[in-house]
Length: 162
Image 1 (tube, helix red, strand yellow):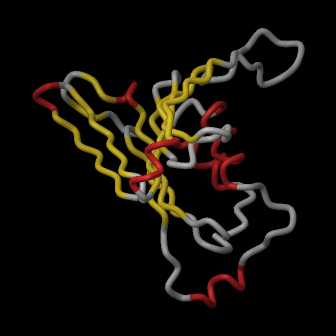
Image 2 (image 1 turned 90 degrees about the vertical axis):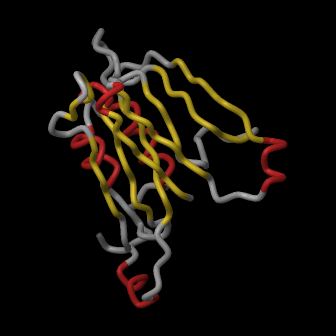
């Protein structure tokens, strides 16, 4: 995948683009999904999750993006580009037991995180090291008046054991 993040201060705009590394024929079963799920982080409370709505490019029969490009009602945009591991000895640090499947970790972080710092902290937990990415999290609430406030962009890289 390839990602482009561009701030245009004169227009007070932030552009986030993602190009999935998938064959062209996949367009025949790619869809735009919008989930509006007013979850509560804890039972018995009226508090709602940070992002009730998630809009993503996805595929028929999957509940997550697969393209890893999601816009959230919390004001976050999350996307990634996969990291190829050239040093295969790093895979010795992989810990598949007790870890969480990467799309599940990302879906949880997408729903619960209120900013990029919180997102990277959540998504990095329980990493098996078997699907390694550079994640970019743009917080659109920190883009205003032609400037970027602290925390507008967070980058998280995952590697086996890290």
